Image 1 (tube, rainbow, N blue to C red):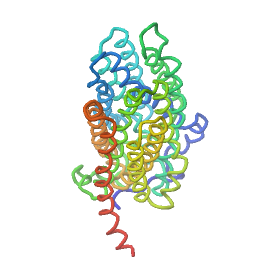
Image 2 (image 1 turned 90 degrees about the vertical axis):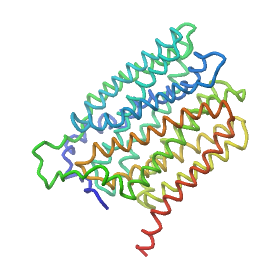
Image 3 (image 1 turned 60 degrees about the vertical axis):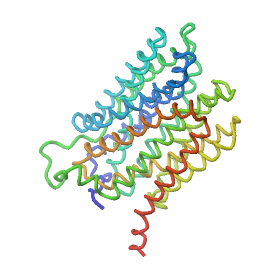
Amino acid sequence: MPGAPGLDATANPGSAHRPRNAKHLDPACGQALNGSAAVISIAVGGLAGAYLLGSDKSLATLPVSMMGVGLAAGALPAALVMQWIGRRVGLMTGTGFAMTGGLTAAIALIVGSFWLFAFALVLVGFSHAFVQQYRFAAAESVSVEMRGIAISRVMIGGVITALIAPQILLYTRDAIGSVQFAGAFVALSVVALVGLGVLTMLRFPPRPSAKASTASLETPRPLLEIVRQPRFLVALLCAASSFALMSFVMTAAPLAMVDSQHSEADAVLGIQWHVIAMFAPSLVTGRLIRRFGKEAIVGTGLVLLMVSAAVGTAGIELLHFWGMLILLGVGWNFSFVGATAMLTDTYRPSERGRVEGFNDLIVFGMVALASFFSGQILATSGWNAINVIVMPVVVMVLLSLLVLVLPQRKASA
């Protein structure tokens, strides 16, 4: 496979910093705190949009879509900033955008400006593009066979996010007078500030120096040459589709639950269980990848996405919504972690910034489109249509994965 092997414990230039990372709960702690901004914004973005719009709910999910736009727009800059100035300073930069976005969102809600609120979530999304770099930082610091475990280990921080973010939201959403949800976004900024403090204590492997030998830093290939690899294309398709479908359903779910006469607290709790399901499997996903292979885990995740859609069409009781969201989260974890591990097989260390940035640009561009159309389709065609759309897309992606895997299996046999 193309790409240089990862660094082992003895070769890793950042290995000397591992004890300090471990002492401060590793990058997973930073992922937990700095990932809270996105969870809070997704959980109430649509509800806050509806609150600002009044009777016309057709654009209610637009702020969440704009967060996806910010995420896509920040993907390439985040990857390049990490390569130019290092992981720690790059992640701190992203946290600054989260703090600014949270305060701007609170101001927008106080003054009643829907479009300022949408812009605020663009900033939150831009910040989350930096958070997404944690998984690549983990993958590049270990050997090839350990990359799946490293990625899933960092993503365990999302479990902490799932536990703290909804509680922050529930206790602070009405903290500022009669302005609903404004307190939650102020709290978002405070959590980001705490995350900034954690980042000052973390250390990552140093960037390769400009004088690095050609043996340790190979000449980068043209981006088009890397992108044209079948394995890269399938990994990108699996990652983008699984993330976009998850966003497509998750964005609509809180609004659909409230429309089905469930409370806002039930909707927030459903998102909490969903986010726990997104990240809790990371305790075992890496080991499953080592045992069964990346492609098998991606395929399993895609099948779970289809099962979640089937549960979503079965009814509108609370258990239907929560069951669907839990299955959606687990399916996303398997497919996205596996696809990310597949992607890291396709490029060399010297190609990291451009390839990771290009990958995230496509993935989160699709996420932004999915969340935007989610609100439109929910308003015009209803909740069942959201779930039905998931099924043919998953079938198409599964077929592309089989086209990649079957020739390899035959050759191996």
